Length: 411
Ligand SMILES: Nc1ncnc2c1ncn2[C@@H]1O[C@H](COP(=O)(O)OP(=O)(O)OP(=O)(O)O)[C@@H](O)[C@H]1O
Ligand SMILES: [Mg+2]
Picture 1: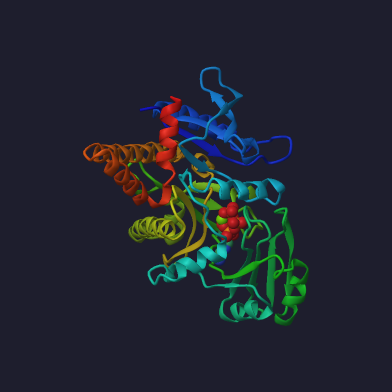
Picture 2: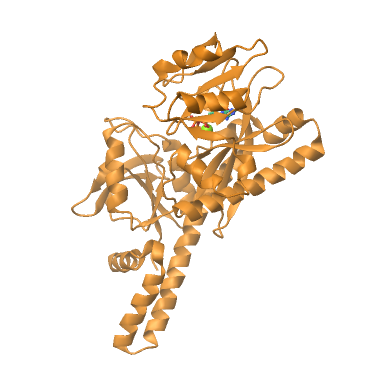
């Protein structure tokens, strides 16, 4: 049997071929080698659609250098493409459509609003979801402002804390509006009366920019900075969901978000949680509950959207120890663990998707071997029909056998 090939699918960040996460892909290629995985990196722009070939980026672990090489399609694809407003993203949609029948380690998750609706259908998740509305007009915001002293507004496709607003009711009865613009710059805080809120927000075009309104959770530490947690849930080498790690994030002074790219600082979960809850026993039980919730959410989203290999959950824990899910990230970066001083978690975070890929490949091979054995025990004609039946059983990846056949011919 040949070596399993994993293609890491990414997007150029500009038209000059700038690629993000290159150091991570170097580490993945090295780790993959030890697992017997042949890894290359590519973008939809590197695909020759007529010949089904890829002008791949290959990292040589010996010379520690990158080069290009024309490759056949990989057995499995690990999709690391993050949303971007560009023609490259349109190209990605075409790629996903045309090659949707291939084996992806992770399918596409939906926007914040759709993910919220999916989870909100399940009773067990509801206590962990801050009430959220799609912003269809002023009344949606008014409803939440009346209900809660703190409200967040976020674009449904936003990332990195861009375009997020926070409205907080103050003791005096006025409302404090704070936030970050689309370039992630902190906007100067403003105080308004209830009736002035909508006017102040007019320039944000909340409706056209597809915002959601969300119940805010009070997460200010004694020093006035906000905090939350980043939990990484991944499939392990047996194809089961597991929490790889969870780290705390503390936002910079004057920020309403904790994102590292917005100047946030990573810290160990235990330190932050014990400090926040001030009861070690309760903190330990909250941590365990959060981990169970993380695994449940990942498994549920996978059932809803198709195969996934990892998700990062932004979790908030309030003073009472109640766990809230702020957001689900489908393309998590792993830097939070390195910054929190958790080297081993960081290492595991990089290796797990590869171990899962190796496991997945093995499963496919075994299934194929079984199908072959069954086929050989029948007459030629019957055997052909039987193989087809077994292939059809593999509903998500019915192209696999074709690819295996093609691959075996090649090697
Ligand atoms: N409902 C909320 N209550 C309190 N804080 C919140 C709430 N929603 C978001 N935040 C704060 O804002 C940050 C960014 O929010 P969110 O993760 O939803 O947006 P994002 O732009 O997609 O971020 P990223 O893509 O980097 O994860 C959170 O990490 C948290 O610090
Ligand atoms: Mg987030």
